[in-house]
Amino acid sequence: MRLWWRAAWASRASSGAGAIRVDYAAASFTAGGKTLRKGDIITIDGSSGQVLAGRVAMQEPALSGEFATLMGWADQVRKLKVRANADTPNDARVAVRFGAEGIGLCRTEHMFFRGRPHPRGARDDPCRR
Image 1 (cartoon, rainbow, N blue to C red):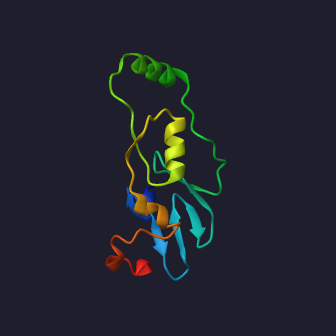
Image 2: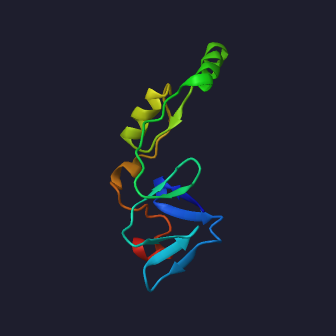
Image 3: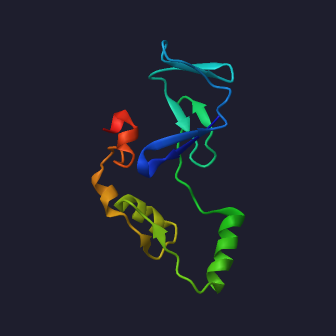
């Protein structure tokens, strides 16, 4: 199963989840022979969309190996500045740590949500009304 998460909008969409069987009465779902219930911990790989049962140890991403070498070569010849999209101060700090030279798009209204869902689409989602 792949679960795609749009973190900035606190909304989700699933793709390739045809094998999931949801039991609303039991507040559970089954996929790949594994049943998870309401309250069970899952980890979502934000790059691949893979859903894993349980808590997985996290690590900070790092620019390393052959990719770091390639990016170093590109930095030597590029003429453009690298800008990042950042919706929060933390997004900006992470972008700078990874080499961004500025912020290209900053939707400052996102700083005021503080974990609350994005108001877009509120009429379609009863949880966000």
